[in-house]
Image 1 (cartoon, helix red, strand yellow):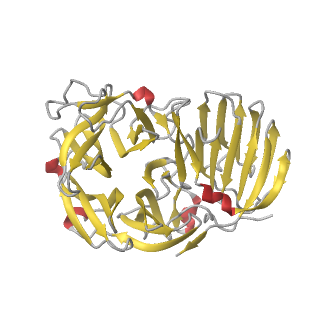
Image 2: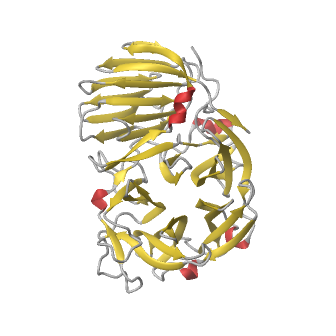
Image 3: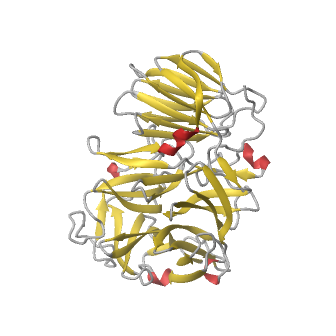
Length: 475
């Protein structure tokens, strides 16, 4: 069967050249999806950030449209950092963080950095027509460090709200909420934080409603690793909130004030934090609602500062990918958010390679596995290098030898045994959906180029393997 000639994926967005990280500006206008992303086109090791963009009508055929925004004003001279997209009329409003590093002997955490909220407007969705600075360091509460970034804007009850990720001078992570009547003039409302410090920085905040539940998503930095939780250097997850954090009358507010600066804080319970993905490569997700009413999540297949930021794709001149788009649904019974690939992905199925699989198989370069287990005890080995093992209520994903390029093992302690799985295997990526998307594990995967794609299955798992057609990426 197929041998690997290049690690370039056939199902996942990658940078045309260079480096890719956070998904940005996700939105849909006139049937066209806009997927922006952090981009350093000149080097796969990351450098000065701009925004690149792919557009698609169906999540099957993508077109790269170029760099949407570059650092070209004093307020973003050191990088066009992460932000969101909001459709307003026939325009796309892209709110983002403009990064500025002042010259001098600064630590750039507490002094010497400007993190500006800037609005870029686009009439064609391809080019940013103009930029307007909305907030600077002077507009943030006085106990904030210089790390305030990643605006996400949404409309609620005829008013606009913005959430910003932040780090205080006391090294406590939090989210700040701002409000606006006109999308241009913003007023600080309150903090969202935890009673006990939960990491030193909360990045990439997102606040959205799913089946009448208010979901706060963010990426906390600085959590201590545990055997079954917080296994990556930095995490991404969500909390189901009791009420609307932008409503001062809701029950989530505390009487305590943060150094007398805010009226009150909406205090979340850090014990309710649920990680989006339990694999090696997932960070900085962002959601949006499409014209069909689906809430879709896309994440970055990478971890900032991880000790495995030396992927062999660097030798090919590129690094990192985005996850497949995932539809989010709320499970009222379990009180969780389920994630599953958008249904358009099923249109890539190009026949059954094998059914009722049990044993060893040679496989095509890209494929999908779907199966069920009665007992929850089985093992799947990908390309003699990646092992997915289910042992009743414990699941593990483990690399053999040095094939993980620094990746080792990730584990899940589940609330029930594995009942079903869906696995999408790209050339250099694997996404595993467990129990109808109750749990997800994502990893980059680099089999040896001189070997065939193969699979070994043992234990109680009835799998069907589908050959997949490649997506189309026009560059």
